[in-house]
Length: 237
Image 1 (tube, one colour):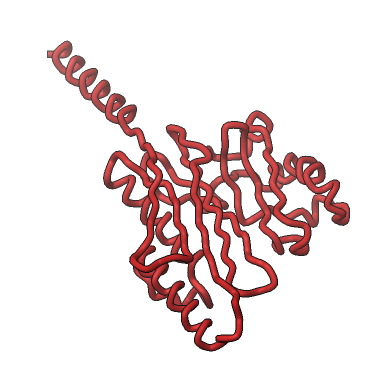
Image 2 (cartoon, one colour):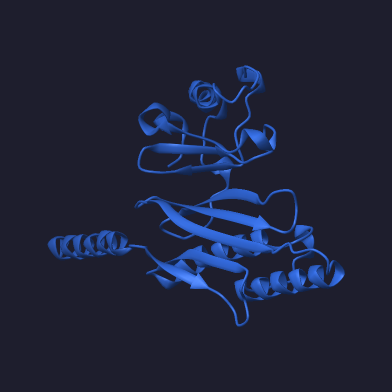
């Protein structure tokens, strides 16, 4: 009887770990447009695999694209899909043309997504958004999305790092190196702030500051990687 129970337990454990190993999320490139659309281009990764997991991932990607295409305050978003957002962007441009018929300014928007890291623990994606709506220059914005591979749930930045103070101390020299030719004031540890965008690639943890986040627009995007082996003790994944 003992041997029979042991065999059942072994079989169940084998099945459990086999199921865990079978959870593999892959991505395909997806182009989204609408009829009569000529000014918006959306190319994003679509998650494939376990439906409950990929639904969570694809839903968050869709929400991010909708936010990036929206003109105005984020609390006024009404679009329920990327297609609706593309249509609204085109409508806003037509209204702009009607209001200012003398201008030859053409609006355009492009959103591209890529997979930075796809590991058994975490999936990191990057969305690059460029919008030109008639200003002095277009706006380039990059956003990172991090997901638990096992659930597809979005991971907030505060859950990526377990010891912020230790992490900042390690990251600060890399920040200084990345900004040494950008004519910024020397940053000390007590004034060093982490960016809105933190993600992973094959080299380690990526930190990215968008234009205007900590410096003037002319400074551009600031991006650097902190090697994983230096921060293993103060991160979750």
